Length: 237
Image (cartoon, rainbow, N blue to C red; front, side):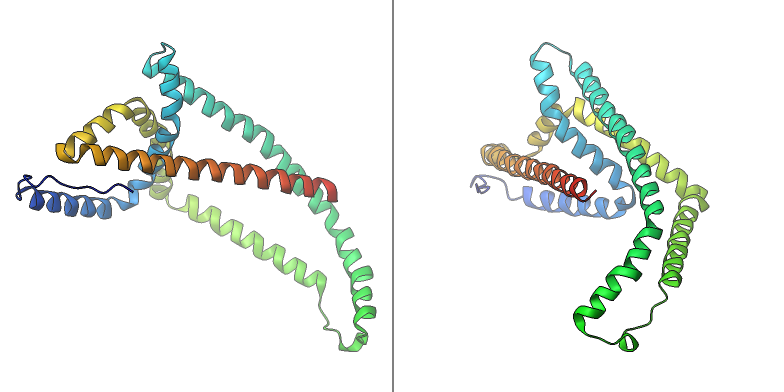
């Protein structure tokens, strides 16, 4: 990896300024930690969408129009995914609830006797478990957890409104970062001393390549796992 090598003629007075800037940025990040998530997500979306916007811009489409196209495509993918996933999940949950009595009967009448015969354990030495009671208890605990979660989400009006505000802030931040990404990169490079420009650009390009490869790898892993899980669940019915 390239290393920053400051010019020997660089004034020493820059170092206190750089140190003070680093301390100020660290303090700002610490104080703004509760509201940083929308900006981090917006920056991630802007980073992912910038190459697409650049490609549209090379095809004589305005920068703002390109960002709008990316947002429409991204929103469409989310809506289509929700329309496909939500009914499917509800259908699978309904099928699971309907199969619970049959699964319970198979467990108590088939699996437990088979294990008893294979392990040669007398029935008296087997642990006596109230399966119906355990099932009811876990269903009740699941209901309590769900109720407490919903209560915590909606009980505090200020917290709920803050969550909605942060959620609404993500697309706004992403829009402006995606539109002005190249300008922001130029401004950030302008902060770096001129003697470091070459090495700084090399470092940023290397980081961009590594991060892009990481994100592509994670996307391929998610797609592969989705195909594997879907195929396995389809095979077992």
